[in-house]
Length: 281
Image (cartoon, rainbow, N blue to C red):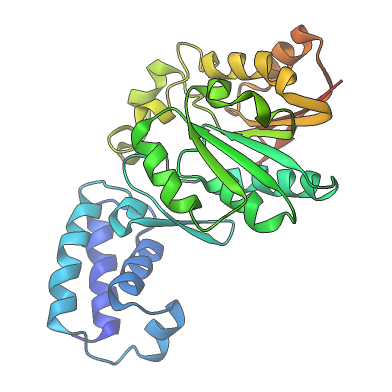
């Protein structure tokens, strides 16, 4: 079987299984098992695929067809140009969260020797993006889940300017780590009753702890908005990802504290509310 035929067969099987982005994911899987670039698939389309590769790929193709997300199948996801190890212990980093990382990087670059905190770090995606792109930054990443914490440590090991702590939100912090120029977070914000309606890739495989925001999706958001000011410098930023329909509620929670100024929503590429940005007074 040639590479061209191999790729076409994966696409056919994925489409039959109802994989939404069958062609894109087929290329990802083919590149993974062949240890090659997408360009190689085209330039070497007539090359024969080794039988051992065909055998190894069969199990991966079957996993994806059963609904396991392609990132978990391949064991990695790319976020802000960084390859991260991912599996069922952590939420898969989303493209919209890259907008949060971009906003955070731009803000922190304007501050000398900045210090940032990444709450609910999960895979460590936000912390890694900031650490890799902001000169002289120091990042503290916290995670409550012991399983996610272990994977975050693996992903953040290359960054000497990142410390990973296990604990519940700000409870993980020692006193000498205060205050911060920015607190960044993609917390659990899906209402509990909505989780069962999500796609099988999400509800059956991604960790509920990283999704479940309580009855209205705002349980963790409330805690963070209330507690963040005591951990921020004056003029420091809270930047938080939220659900697309939670913008008004998040802004109201921020206003109730009396601790923030210039609180506003930042929209995603689809034009929906996606992040709340607020500065400490």
